[in-house]
Amino acid sequence: MYFADYKHFVTNSPFLIGASEGSMFRLLDYYDYSTNKSYFEGHARLENDRMILKRLPVLNKTLMREVIYFNYLATTGNKPYYEIGYGLNQIFLMFNVEIFAGFSGSKHEYTGIKIGIPFVGRSGNSITIGG
Image (cartoon, rainbow, N blue to C red; front, side):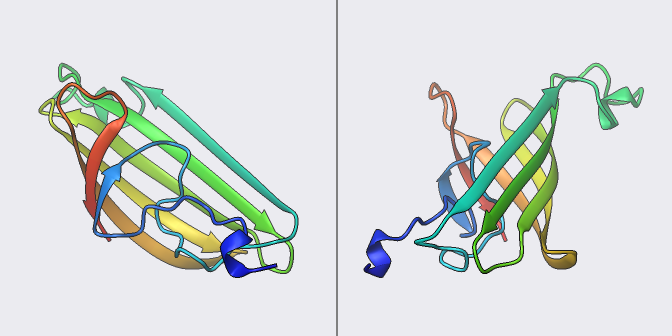
């Protein structure tokens, strides 16, 4: 089987990207976990308008929404990879800010901050800046 035929997972590791969706890995390198064998991929996203920071009196009247992410990937022959993250969406109705930590097995591998600027009038699409 050719490498182009492997399963490659959606990731958001470049500095600038055109989409910010919940079903992608934020910190995973492009081809580290590509596989032609069995795998398990899972994404969970919990979005609410009052979880952690929005309970503060200064922020409780804003329109921001808080998001908690959990992304998991298990491939044959590799340690499981997972990411956990926290984000604030619609800051000043214009920006999304996310912070993520990525782990390989029980070892911390990556930490990253992403800043998204949603396109006007297009639901689900944004430009994301981060590293």
